[in-house]
Amino acid sequence: MLDTRLLREHPDRVRQAIAAKGSDCDLDAVIAADAAWRAKVSEVESQRARQKAANAEMAKLPKGTPEFLAKVQEMKAVSAQVKEGEIALGELEASARKLLLTVPNIPHESVPVAPDPSGNVTAATWGLPDGKPGPKAAHQIPHYEIPWFQQIVDFPRGVKVTGAGFPFYVGDGARFVRALLQFFLEEANKAGYVEVAPPVFVNAASATATGQLPDKEGQMYQTVEDSFYAVPTAEVPLTNFFRDEILEAKSLPVCRCAYTPCFRREAGSYGKDVRGLNRLHQFDKVELVKWVHPSTSYDELEKLRGDAERLLQKLELPYRVLLMCTGDLGFTQTKKYDLEVWAAGQQRWLEVSSCSNFEAFQARRAQIRYRDPETGKVEPVHTLNGSGLAIPRVLVALLENNLQPDGTVRVPAVLRPWFGKDSFGGV
RNA sequence: GGAGAGAUGGCUGAGUGGUCUAAAGCACUGGUUUGCUAAACCGGCAUACCCCCAAAAGGGGUAUCGGGGGUUCGAAUCCCCCUCUCUCCGCCA
Image (cartoon, rainbow, N blue to C red; front, top):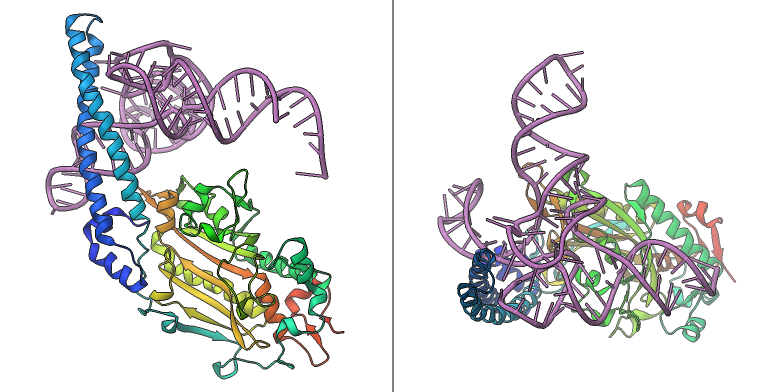
């Protein structure tokens, strides 16, 4: 949600952003609805002021006197007007807010302007000889074609027990998932993110605050009896922790991390993308979230990106960092880096982290603010988040890149304390 | 799941239809006094939105006593629904 003052005072900047993001938001309608609402506010409030003044007078009059009764009669009409006005005002407000929620966030000036993903810029690469994809795996085999893969990740049993996209990890598969989780959480702790174990179901207010509702309802699993939503990412419960609160300026930045399973319906995803572990309905992820002072949010974004990159470096996995162009930015983001790991077996990039700055967009909607100690004013904080990291795709990259000629997979040194072995697999 | 009690500002807590513009205390904070600390005294102390002002400063207004609806000229107060919390019972890792 943008600040309405920006819409009123600098509609051109907003119009530019809408065009750059390729949004179909009708800004004129948003502004017209806001103006209509404001006009009605003034009208209704002045009527209410009249009502209050009359109440004060009547409090002093003895009840039942002719003057008193005359006032009652007079105020009956005003009361009816106010009631009518309030209904109209409620409708105008709801429609203005609904329209306001369709306005996308404004891209940062450092974001390349382009209509589609071809405009994304490679900001960095790591571990690629000559900056090109590689190194070559011993055998160029997609993870789902490794002979023993089904022994550590069991899809048919997942289908039987739940459905497609809900695999079982078995034996070394399960141990490997746990090793990655431990590693990611430890690294996040060391980097200063306080660990949180959040609820994995959230209510509608929380899903609205972080932007999953109203538009992306179809992407979330819902409970039948209680109208809860299974979290699509730990970002949702984590960011909502401070919803409707005012933080101390000196407590900023607040950095937190959480592991949760993530549940996504992925409606409309088919084909090659979804083979093996590439895309699942349930997967494990560690998420990093920051609440920061507005003046620091772009520095914090770079740090966040660095924290996520370091994980891939320690795992010795080649990757690239994409600075997303305006056309590939989400509705709520002002700037976003995607970290894509190279999966040698499939010869393709897999997104394992997405680090975003939302500026005040989420904070305004979620009412997360801080008090400026100098002015005493209350302002929305800036929020950021990034994955650190998504487990299954990291597992994919490790399986495909570290596959040895003898059919086993080498375990990176940093995982050995958690995994307990330096290789696994083989027939 | 059953029965009962409750929800008022950062916190404690008064307030059962009309200056509630929400008492009082605590906490926080500014000042005065005072060797220091402390105390005492005086003052300040919410959030959101609208309007005035080019803007800031400042001023005016409206709303908010868990949420929503109702009764009434007027609701923190009366009625209904919902949510949450607490106590007891039952069940349970």
